[in-house]
Length: 203
Image (cartoon, rainbow, N blue to C red):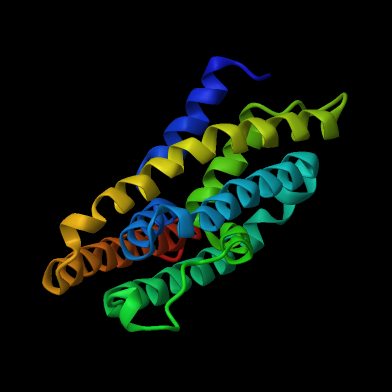
């Protein structure tokens, strides 16, 4: 089960641009790598738990997916648009004592509204999880592999954001970066929302 195609799939889905990685890059720039670590752990362990539950209850999840997918997708996209607005308005964290990076629990819970995470989890459960035998053990192995591959991949985005901090120390450069990230995040949200609406047959 834990073969190269599965690990490659996890790596590609984890390191390619998406809501999680755009948020991590912005957090790395605005808060640094160390303060972004709980966000990273929340993503990896949140996706791993999501995968475990989905793979273990595959039949039930797939039966209810048709009615759940669109509401979850819309909720996730609306949350991404709100995060885009927050990133757009973000200034220097030193200037705002209330500024905080997304924490472990928030990042873990967001995966249940993240359309890209659902795509990875559902595809993994369908393509790689056995449908009989030791289902719980197989789901646990898939989840562990997902977390171990995902964490260093998403860490690249947080680390890159952290390395950019000194180049974006000026207020104008930082605002430009935050604007670009906010636009990319909003564009991602709208694209995902349109995809979910098309999948539901509403367009």
